[in-house]
Length: 189
Ligand code: 5GP
Image (cartoon, rainbow, N blue to C red; front, side, top):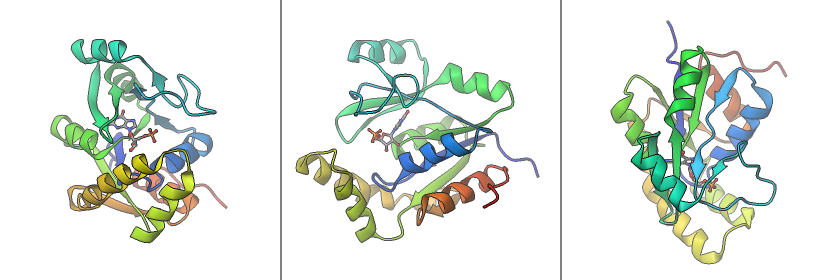
């Protein structure tokens, strides 16, 4: 059976989507990982064009107005994030195995326009573990953490909208399972 070329990875906030996609970027060069545009300022160590394209509010407005985004959303009521249509299309045209790591609102938009894509939900091993991971990150204020937990509760309920669920117990395991669902062979360990 041929695998769909585009896979969407979504799931609750703080479940570790970013960690899994970073692991895939570093270990699975066969996967083309989309780099999103965002109005969020870079965190320490984040590189423009690698982790995100960091853009101003005005630039993001222009991307929306020119319909350059496949999907976009305001995440945690704060910053805007969006997938660049042209780069994703070019990667698909080249026959690459494409992965989008986006939030649930974005995943729902892609489902409207590309229902044939492969939708994968990344789930935490447990709610307590998810709270622990969120607190452990330490890059957000208490208020931001609370906002993210509220979002996460709603997002957990969305699991049935997805074709597959991968439990993020360890990053290696979750990444291996995800690439298997994308039709690639997991790394030999
Ligand atoms: P962070 O600010 O921690 O890098 O990401 C916050 C959230 O934004 C994560 O849930 C991530 O999946 C989501 N996100 C990143 N890029 C995109 C995008 O292009 N579109 C949408 N809808 N969400 C995104």
